[in-house]
Length: 197
Ligand SMILES: NC(=O)c1ccc[n+]([C@@H]2O[C@H](COP(=O)([O-])OP(=O)(O)OC[C@H]3O[C@@H](n4cnc5c(N)ncnc54)[C@H](OP(=O)(O)O)[C@@H]3O)[C@@H](O)[C@H]2O)c1
Image (cartoon, rainbow, N blue to C red; front, side, top):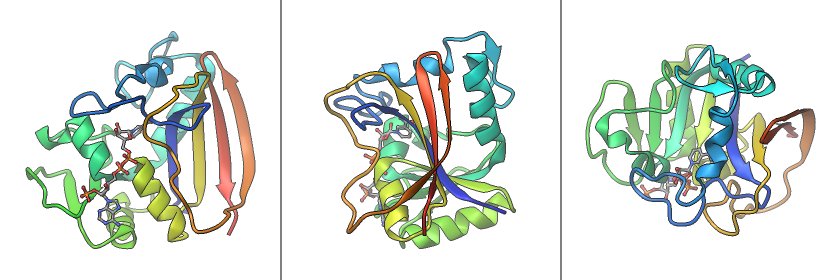
């Protein structure tokens, strides 16, 4: 069954960017968070140019191949420079949640301004039975508040960044998590949770 999940690279102190992320410099000074995409010798089956450790490639490709559409927040879109037409996944279309209009129009990008429920509904249609991935701490938090997240993956990198954008922002209460699996790999530990509802 189609799931909504988020799988982000995160520091041990909970940041998905370092300090001062900006247009074209999406991780700020936290570039170390993505080192594991390229520090191995196993090519990804889904993302051209990625060479991961064998352990990470297995986790990464399983997730990447399940994705049919992605919802990201406006900060992720801006910082990643996707107004030039890019998107985070080679085949999955991108839905951007923003209060502001799209700065440019591209066939594989849809802007939604009416809230996370609508953004995920649009993405589910586009995903055509596959999973919906979430990107950006703001969007993940909105989706958690709306009770729409099935699974969370933390690609936890052994560093304390000391500042940046958090994976999780404030929530109105507790949300329970059930551990699905942990995969230790060189330079990163993949921690997979199911959200208890
Ligand atoms: N480490 C990783 O794996 C990873 C992966 C993806 C992204 N990132 C990084 O994460 C950073 C972004 O995370 P973030 O938490 O700052 O932001 P985000 O979730 O990408 O975007 C938040 C923005 O989305 C819009 N938004 C959120 N909820 C909305 C709603 N209900 N209705 C309409 N618009 C809404 C708002 O923008 P407006 O009001 O301005 O429109 C809000 O400021 C980027 O720097 C990116 O590079 C890291």
